[in-house]
Image: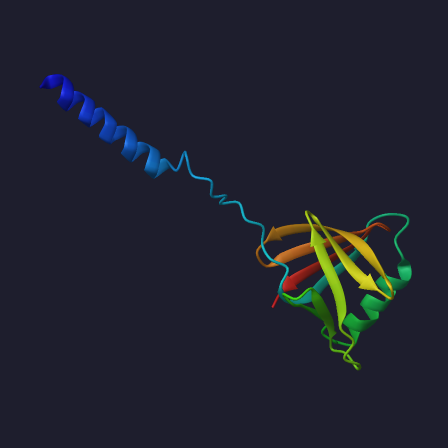
Length: 135
């Protein structure tokens, strides 16, 4: 009788421990935040000697004019730049920690780094760092 009670208590304790700790669960709690939504360009930094000073100049000019530069990423792999005079819809796709943005007929790669759910940075191959904040 003592052996069966001890075995039952041990089995119950083991089942409770395994289910509460999720040792055998396949769920991954480290999900990557989504790029989908409206993002405002917070800042732009030329961090390398190859960075385009023209892009930095245009951003500074827009910032001085108090224009709000924003990008709307949609779930169907399209995005639009806001405000826009024309309704040009461009495409993007994300692969691992890179996002590929359509520019003319080619896709330009950017390294994607989420600081948190509401801040993401894009690093271009020319060492231009673009920081976006979710609106």
